[in-house]
Length: 401
Ligand code: SAH
Image (cartoon, rainbow, N blue to C red; front, side, top):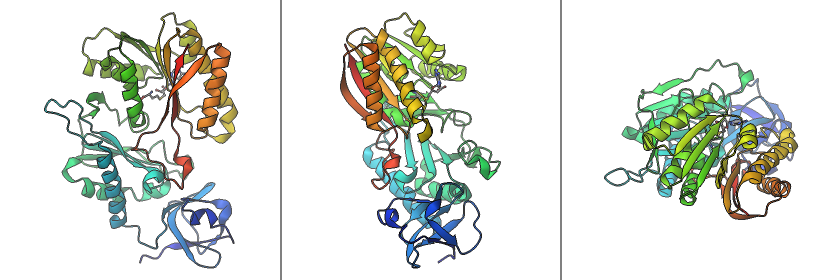
């Protein structure tokens, strides 16, 4: 076995690790046997010298992200095993589909690795057709990036032509890695991916996250079912995922709104790709609150999918007020019989808190609402049962009277 630097825990600090929680906080560490460098793989022992785990060490309150609770090498075999399991899960969910002869219902867009949910903390991999976009959220995963890319290529074989590494904005700023985005394997010019038979331009070079919000796939499908004959407002539209689905669902008109002009360009491109020349769609570059204040169209199907209002626990109260205000503004103007799809992707806001924020919005707007669906992240964003922090996306579909 490869020799690793060793960390010793304080007495009694291994309880959460015995319950398979994959994080070790800095306060739990007694000492290390030599100087540590951010991104090092470390062997973790308890105060009596018993083996507990192996993980990536990093500077910050989460000091170690556990890769394994077994005493094993973290090598290509390790990563291949984890990646092959992740791929099997996506295959068994039915996310890799060719569709029929015309490509109807084809799907080639999915999250292959969702950090702790796939026992690879700090790593995200989204697959778009034959390109994988890989993102490191920890220095340890950054250090291992080549090993991971090679393992991924081996596991996916010819189905994968290129791996793009996109960690410029996700690595800890202080680590000072001067990381640049770029291809680690191959090169790809095809920027179109297919989700449930719909086409999307994916801007993995410059787009937000890995280029697309894969996590709303199931919720977009549900919206499609409610779209027939409705006037749809897709607020915070980004690439226009919800808009494209509602067009296919037979919406009467679809208006997409985002404060970013680049997003408006993207949504227009994606509508054109699927419904060329269709006049039912229009996109607006505007601030959400201002648009809701000034709008005169009666929208009876509204999507509110804002960016995370609470990036940290400290911002929780203010974030909840933000969700309430936003939803109240939308509800005030929705005609009776409307349907609202409302989301929060803030990890710091839990399901009950979000529901309370929507309760307050209904009170403020003076509307009766009923919950039709309670939504969450899809199956390719699995939640490790020992790591409840992995649950982040929540949504409600409400009927507004
Ligand atoms: N619903 C999208 C993802 C939304 S991401 C999807 O399914 O892909 C959040 C989006 O909100 C970003 O595109 C961002 O540009 C936009 N945004 C952030 N603040 C905004 C504001 N005040 N008004 C309107 N859009 C905003």
